[in-house]
Image (cartoon, rainbow, N blue to C red; front, side, top):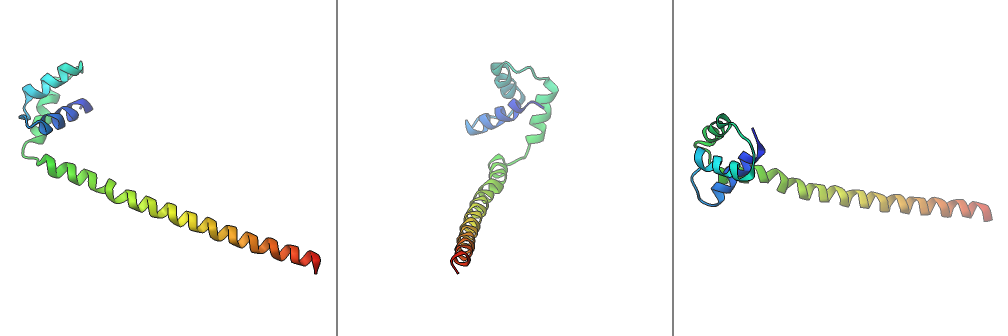
Length: 101
C-alpha cells in the first residue's frame, strides 16, 4: 500500500473530512500517485472503526519515552568520560612522581 494513502487518511482526518474511498482517491490523484482502487478500498476497510486520535497517540508514545532515555544515556557516557579523565590524570601524576622519587 502506498504511504501516500496513509498520509491522505491522516490529512482527511485532521481536516475533519470523511474517510471514504472517493476522498482518499481525490488526494491520491492530486499527488499524482497511481493507486489501485483495491488499495483505497483496503485502507478504508482497515480504518473502519479505528479511533485515529488514539492510534496516533499510541504511535507517538514510544518516541516520547525514548527521547529522555537517550538523553540519560548521553549524560551517563559524559560522566564516565569525566571519571576516565580523572583516573588518567591521577595515573599520570603517579608516574611523574616516580620519576622524581
